[in-house]
Image 1: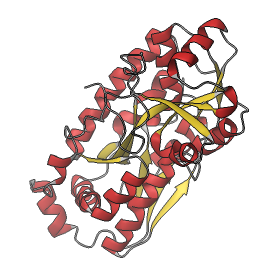
Image 2: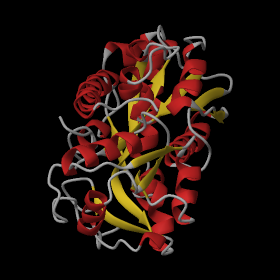
Image 3: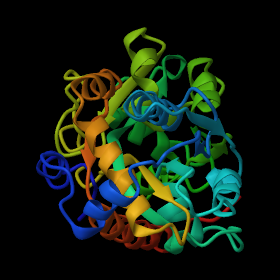
Length: 330
């Protein structure tokens, strides 16, 4: 499994029905009162980015479904480690969730000596959505195609700069994959999240970013940045004029950002099943599907067990890239 983006691998079949396992039945009967107070959703990146938006879309619908506040709290820093460490200390009662991209769950353990948490112990609930990453340049760079970007990067090693959402994020690792495939050397400029990084690309203070469609769509549509290629096997419906990396001359350049909901270690199975039941209902909502689609994202889904298997596979994949490309924390 190279990415979660294989639409149909986890997505639509798994959203067709609610869980029918004994745990789900127990959740429906014995935990019907859950939730009976506000639920805290920690997003380990700043407000305004794709992680934040994906969580808020789901939180709004859960509030309507269960009649309780689902409060999104942004706790950013250290590539998502700050917020995730805070989440890891929460009571395992279902009233604190983490919605995060791959970094804290599948990448950061290969980059940081002490995370302050053990991602393998978290209890996956489901994957909300995913969106392909895209090679994006500042219009000030004058670069118009992926071929031009590769040519300039090869001609001027360690002069072109790229912003990222932070060390260990998919934008950072996607840039590492790009350099590994092209034999180029770029200069990494890490930020505390997607929004500030994109602001500096728009302003021409950094040359490029490997970000996802969700975080860059509005800027691309406004002509403030230029999307060069989609890092996936098919074009994104929201930007049909942007070629895939293979079409642009770089086969094998595939990278997708996904956003998973997890509960703290030790959360009882009936509570996890109840959370999955609610999120499954939310993800089947035409309104949620429409809002994610407008952001350039696709609903995914997946049971807790399937999500756990997927996150483990992603951990193996990204860990291999970190070792092969010798990615380090600057």
